[in-house]
Length: 88
Ligand SMILES: [Zn+2]
Image (cartoon, rainbow, N blue to C red; front, top):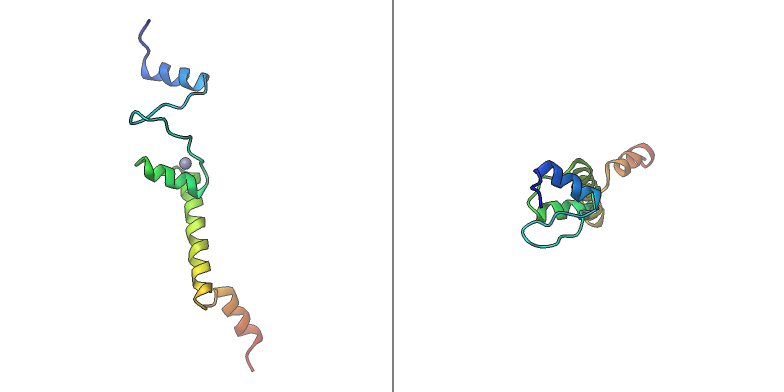
């Protein structure tokens, strides 16, 4: 069997649709562009890819907003609406 360079090996792995095992274990493919995907990157100690980073930001912003609402704070839009409409 001839030796493959890393690049050739990458091509071969892509060609047959294999995911390269890391750390000796089979890992599920990362669900890129989702919060779950971001968690998977963290778990593997990888830097987040752009879609995952954005998805995580969105997720955390949403969570933060929901928590504020649950605590009874107004969102900026609600505050603005109250200023516009409710002043008597
Ligand atoms: Zn990703």
